[in-house]
Image (cartoon, rainbow, N blue to C red; front, side, top):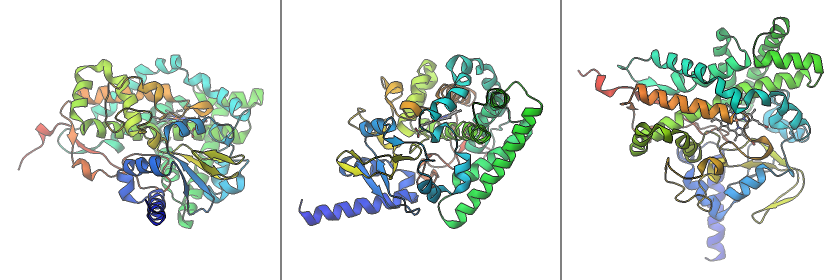
Length: 425
Ligand code: HEM
């Protein structure tokens, strides 16, 4: 290749990355070819985001895995407050005073406070209740009309579960979900930021009120325990308590909701794999892991920033830059996964190799809960509606088009639960 050709290709790559990171629908509906190209041609890409803070995107598996656990790449956004403020604004800073945006020792302290509630043994005890919630949601469906599985099943299921665990009263869950949705959907324009600030302020007021109520009348839930810990041991501040509540509520339902959607869509578009899950239910746990690898719901890890100059795959990431780690890309890296673009629910060793729950100190605390919810949701749905099919062609699926996507998920998932019962004219 001549120097001019090389430059041309580099410019095209830069333009594609720019368009993709701004939420261009072509890349959102199928980001995988672009990520493949980046892994080969530009494994650490410089982004030009609208917020103006220098940002670098890491796309190869080994680099991503190392970066997720690299102490030189900090999660402490309070140390990078100017950069953080220009990306998200003050209202986000106040909500993000939690483990996800902290380094040790603060991270260790905040994570330890809630860790006990999420260990596999405790989560297993919730299984009957999660099954009950799932069954109640499925009971409400009629098979005559198309159903939007995302809004009527994928979202309410994890929302109800995490709200019960935290202690958000049933009558307030809808409101909490709405406020969370605004926060997740906003971009970086002035108008977006104003909407974001309004939703975040609304959430903060709601949380303050909920905390005050738990303080007055403690119940058998995680928030009451945290409030008690706050008051008796003084081991977290008011702001940290509120932010912990926020991260658990937000991360505890959106990720799983989008993953249920991705899972149903992927299985319905790979009928041979679905058939195997249905006839051999013991394959379901591995199928869930392969879904997380193949079409996981967290596309990019949360923001990090370089504490010093760091070189990754030959590219210098200067001190102070934001670092984004493309989990979706890493999980399809041919250097780490055989036939990475093949969806194979029997893929050996996938649970311990995919990065869908992250890795290192910030490894997803909710992974045991998410796994259980996924298994119950999919087993129950396909058992109850074995003839379920997409109501619209797979190519018309509507994927999220948020800029700098944290999530990879569908905006709607219309299905026919039993096409044989569709009335004919
Ligand atoms: C399928 C569903 C889920 C996926 C794909 C997922 C994915 C992730 C990923 C990739 C991270 C690491 C982020 C980073 O390093 O930047 C993370 C962290 C986290 N997740 Fe999940 N998650 C899921 C479900 C849940 C649930 C159900 C909860 C419930 C509490 C939860 C709570 C958290 C928390 C609190 C963290 C931060 C942990 C820390 O900073 O130490 N997640 N998750």
